[in-house]
Structures are given as C-alpha cells and as structure tokens.
Amino acid sequence: MKKKIIYSSLTIVLVFILSAFSTSMLENDKKKKFVVVLDAGHGGNDPGNRGNGYKEKDISLKVVLAIGAALEKDDRFKVVYTRKTDEFIELHERGKIANKAKADLFVSVHCNSHHSQAYGTETFVLGLHANDENFNVAKNENSVILLEDNYEANYDGFDPNSPESIIGLILSQEEYLDQSLTLASFVQNRFNKTLKRKSRGVKQAGFVVLHQTYMPSVLIELGFLTNDKEGKYLNSKKGQEEMAASIITSIVDYKESLDAVYYVPEPEATKVVNNDSITKLVGEELYDGITFKVQIAAGSNDLELAPKNFNGLDQLSKVKFGELYKYYFGNTSNYNLIKELRDVASQKGYPSCFVVAFQNNELIPLTEALKVNTSSN
Picture (tube, rainbow, N blue to C red):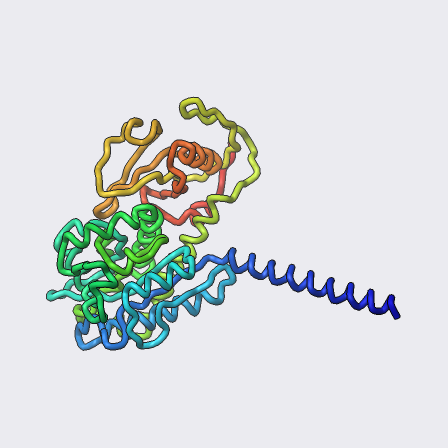
C-alpha cells in the first residue's frame, strides 16, 4: 500500500514537472515570436480623410486586417492590433498597446489627401518635418488628438499645429531610426516594383503615433483618396488586397533580413580582415553582383566621411535616402567578411549596426541577396 502511495506521489510530481517544463517551453516559444503591432489609422467618430467620398478609416482597417490575417498564419509572428473594429482609439493609447506588447515592429496604415490630383505611396519615419509638405501630412494625422478628452494632459501640451512641438518628438525614436528606415525602404520598393505604384519616397515627419512607440516604427500612406483613379483603386477589394500583400512581403523581408545576419555558413576559404589593430580570418562566401555594407547611422546631418566622425572607422560611404543620410561601413561581396566588419563596428560604438545588401546600387532585402548563387574562390 505504501509503495502504491509512493508511486502515485512520484507520478504526480513527474506530471507536475513535465507540465511546468512544457509551460516553460511554450513561454519560450512565445518569446521567440516576432511581435508586429498593426495600427489602422483613425476609426469611430474620426473618419480620417474623405477624399472622393471614401473613408480612410475603413480602407486602413481592411488593409490592416488582411495583413494581420496573413501574418497570423506564419508561426514566426505574433500580431497585435490597436483596433480590429470601427472604434476610436486615442493616439497615445496606440503607442501604449505597442509598448505593452513589447513589439519588435509598429506599422501604422493611412491614406493621404491633397487639394490637387497628387498620387503615389509614401512611407514615413519619425523625424524633423524638413519641409512644409511633410509637416502638413503630419499635421493632418496628428489633428485627431483634438477629438480626445483632456488631450493637453495626454500629450503634455503638444500642439499639432506648431512646428516647435514637432521638434520635441524626435529624440525618443533616434535609437530605432536605422531599422525604421530599412523597413520603410522595403515597403516603398515593393510598392514600386511589384505593384508599379508611384513612389513618393521614404520621408520623415513628426507623427505623434510614432513618437509614442519604443521600437522600429513606420507610418504608411497607401495613396491619395483625393486622386480619382488612386482613390477608386484603394477603395476596391483588389487594391486593398494588393497593397496588403505588398506590405506583408516587406514585413517578412525585414524580419528575415534581421535573422539572416546571424546565419553563419561553413567557410570554404580564408581571408584576412584588417581594421586598425583588429585582424581576423574569415571564410570567403562571395555573392556575384551583391554589395554588402554595415549600416552604422542615419540622420538629417550631412557628415564628412572621415574616421574622426565615426569613432575611428574607415571604409565609409553614405547615401542620401529621401531627406535623410544613411552611413555605411565596409563594402564587399563576401558575406562572412561583412559579418566580421559588423562586429568591428559594434565594438567601435555602434551596437545597433546591421548588415544591408545592394544590387545595382539599390537596397534589397538581405535574404533576397543571400539567394544569389555563390562563387567561392
């Protein structure tokens, strides 16, 4: 009888341990998921712009739900929505949702408007508005806070009509600017290449909803509802499905490009890397027609490419991308070598640096670059 009691007790303990272990494994699996927060602009008593009689709030929601439905089928992603129905969510609450979810990415979807027949897509990252046009876009999107109760307290006196207020938003997102720019460029390139939509580029402006988040964040303007042709396209099921599919691909490309940085192929040869006092041997893995670089910084200032401005790094280059400059370290078709140079840059004071790829002088997803046939020497 005592043996049976002992065996029963051991069984209970074993089941408890296995249960706890399984729960722990599940929690670890959840932690590994890439969390994307999808934000459909406007909603409820805020219709957004009403170009040609269409409702921005409805179009943005349909596109966001289509993006989310596809990502939810991919085990690598966890999707969080700021809204899934026609409801009004205050801008500061949207940021809180993303921060509480500890999101890896925040994507806000909107539609544009203009007094002319302007058309085309544009993707914004948080930054100084740089010109009146960008300021007006941000001003229109930020004006929703005036619909909120007690908005002065929620936004600490922020005035959506004041350029000075915009400047105060910028510093909190500087840490994530590089990654935000990369995703934004993927989005715009995909719209242009796949859907043949006119690209108005990647731009910077002071959006409150981006200011509220603490992760790489972009705001996508799908196009102009005020344009007769584009408004009709965006209000159609076909247009919404195509725009959603393009954004889905861009998000997957961005996530896979981050993952690809940690892929270490087996070296087939060796090469010496010299940078100041650092010397390493790396395997050669060459990609024809591909140039790898390490992105170390981005900003609106046009800096001289001198080691003194970049913590002693040489092998520098820069590209003006829209209204911002991206700064790079290294230039090689050897993927193993660029990974080593990334480590060098990190040691030199750029811990958030990452590898990017170019083909024909155009930025492409890293995973796309790694599909190119290799030729080892």
